[in-house]
Image: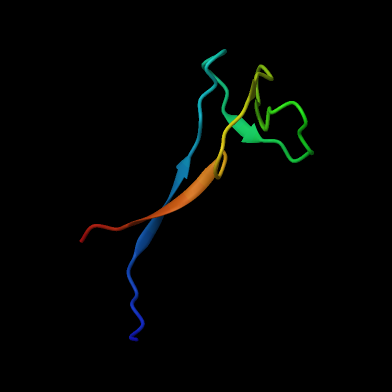
Length: 64
């Protein structure tokens, strides 16, 4: 197989808090027992997300 290279750009994906509508949520590092695995950095509201979590970086192709 041939190696393929293409230019990409990083894109940050965040989740805006539903309660205060100002803060972004971050994934909690501690072991979570109450199903709240994310927390707003401003008001402290807890959230539960399945999957990769927030914030995260994805890479998208650069259009020529």
